[in-house]
Image (tube, rainbow, N blue to C red):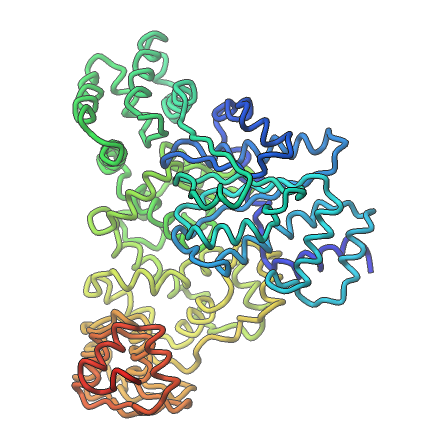
Length: 632
């Protein structure tokens, strides 16, 4: 077999579907001018990169101080140095996107395997190290077993230095993080590994007790902020820039930069232009007065609300806000949306939005350019300011067009192309994903958005979607499959575990309503139209069984019970709705089922053990009701 193919297979075994190195390559065009280049000239950074000690550098700074820009710059710099150096070294980088989810070493497993894959990729095909790894009789390298230690020792023996950049790891458990760093052999003074972490949090004392490390605080410089503001000013305002003198513009940008608290705050080019004109000077004064007594959190909120006001008062405010929330959702579920996918989504909105759509993705991107960037290589869209993205996410109740987005998903999944039902093979499903780039995103997000929607406002869209059983099967298959962003990573994941055929089968319209927690209005209407509350899917589950999996589905469960759903019905595995709710539900859903006569086997130690582990509040409720003893 060709060595290139063998190496590809080895990489798949190390970390199936991983694309960390490509993510950094794809964002290479996002940097603005020379922003962040001061970091490379910092003596502390240069000493870390060139010397044996310290091996660990913790770079910390508040949100939006340019840390991700710095991490990208560092990767580019080290990679370029690698090409010109006689020293054999490798560069790996990981972007941590799931904040607050790193509580034990296990949570770092994906990062460990990703780093290993990236370093192995940099082994020359001529190296004996690569040939030994390829010939190793191991199906999958597992980071907690001895075979991982073997591969890591091989890499350290080959490379004279290994640089690892960890970006965006905020608030991990200190012990778990130290265990993770120790796994990379940073505790060994002879190790060739050098790690830099970029985080919002200051270093843990435990880190420097265990490892040879140093820390560095970063803040956006005045020069960097001016560059950032100049680009924001120029976005879509090239024609207006000539109306201002250079001195007026420079004075305005300098004043704005002074208000930014050494952070890259979100701001529209229109606000910048307006504040630079004699009639708009009051905008700058008003913001300045508001910030005079504000703390850091209040400052960022002020700028975010200024950006929101700029968006909502613009001609296409509803359109832009919908796009921003689609991009927030995409990042959470690891989907990559390009302009065509976003246009596809917006075409599914009501006429007030769809009628305002521009003809091309380029025009749509220009419309959003103050707050959205487009990656040059992949054309994937993202939100420029993490501060604005977090602000909008925290204020979904007041700012998010939830009903609009849920309706978009429902209408998209109702398209004629999906009425043929589920695909009959993995290849066929991949072909469908490739032909419909929004499908994976819409299917995997629908249930998340239905949990927050005013169901009455979208009941018509839901009833249209659920009226075709084939559309339901198509949706369920896409929702349970691997997320689809690109063919190669999808193929790797599917090779490890085929997920094209794991979706629940035999769902009726009422099963779907239960699956999504669609609520009283939808359940009542479906029953009125003839839906059977005791209908069974392939697993012999009734809609009540399905609804019992939802911790927030009280309204749906209550509606099913009011229509006479049987609380004692058992599915294929012998579980009733209550047994399911004990592990997956909530105190409210468990209480409701018990009050309607549901029972469970109090001697089932496995069930009670799962309940205690997954739902301790439910377990405490069972004790309070006297259904189990405190010694169970």
